[in-house]
Amino acid sequence: MRRARERRTAELVAARELTPSVRELTFAIREGSPIEFVAGQYANFHLGQDQGLQRSYSMAAAPSDAGTLTVAVTRVEGGPGSEAMHTLPVGATVPVDGPWGLFTLERVPPDAPLLFVATGTGLTPIRAMIEAELAKANARPVRLVFGCRREVDRLYADDLDAWTSTHARFAFDTACSRPTEGGPAARVQDRIPEALEALRPHGEPHVLICGLRAMVEDVRALLKEAYAIGRERIHTERFD
Ligand SMILES: Cc1cc2nc3c(=O)[nH]c(=O)nc-3n(C[C@H](O)[C@H](O)[C@H](O)COP(=O)(O)OP(=O)(O)OC[C@H]3O[C@@H](n4cnc5c(N)ncnc54)[C@H](O)[C@@H]3O)c2cc1C
Image (cartoon, rainbow, N blue to C red; front, side):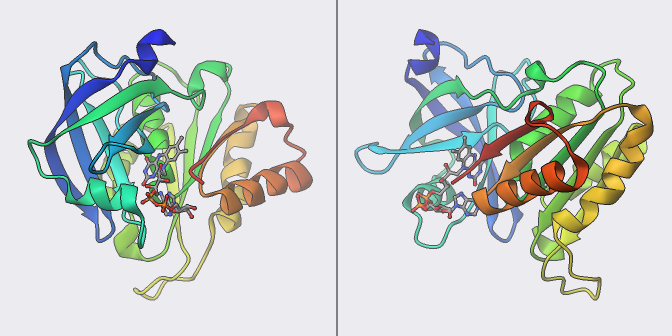
């Protein structure tokens, strides 16, 4: 805990636009001990002129030997934290502490089928967990239901596509709420029944949900009321 509280200095070493509203940033720790996180955890970034603005961002990639922290940030209209992360120049340094959070696979039985549900940058901790899970010699099936507004908002789509080609146990479905390319409008809630059906023969799935509060609560209620999935099998992270 003391180590998590330690403020390190992190340098932005790479950045790229993932979608029109999401920027991915990769940081290297320059001063202080490494942030040894588990996939699914987050770090706190101290932003703004006097570094008094604290915002949390989940690591979007599984831990690597390089020891870097990669996060993906949605630009929120009028939001000072996300604005600071979107305008931070490569080479700039920011104070960071962590890792924090219990939204990981550590409390999920190792052979339970997994259903991940994410909207927007709620995909970030889930992407890290899927990446870490698929690197293991595990056989359990892994499903992802991802929700976004338009097709251009599908972040990390290339990685997800690549993982479906290389791992027969992984599949994902995208629900666009305001499609612009002619497909049907859908929410993640609409795609959950099919995903649960596919997992059913493999055992009782654990469900990991991440995004804004309204979606997380809605999905939690659906799982409980329509599928009698108990709270011990539902794991959530809310961004607001
Ligand atoms: C544990 C944790 C992990 C988080 N991980 C991420 C992450 O990986 N990526 C990320 O972009 N944000 C993440 N967030 C949200 C982030 O900490 C900030 O709240 C967000 O960047 C908005 O800060 P702001 O200062 O720009 O806006 P503020 O003025 O603080 O406005 C906050 C409002 O912005 C909205 N909001 C917050 N996050 C998002 C979002 N991701 N997409 C759309 N609307 C949002 C909510 O309605 C919230 O009420 C996380 C939050 C928590 C608690």
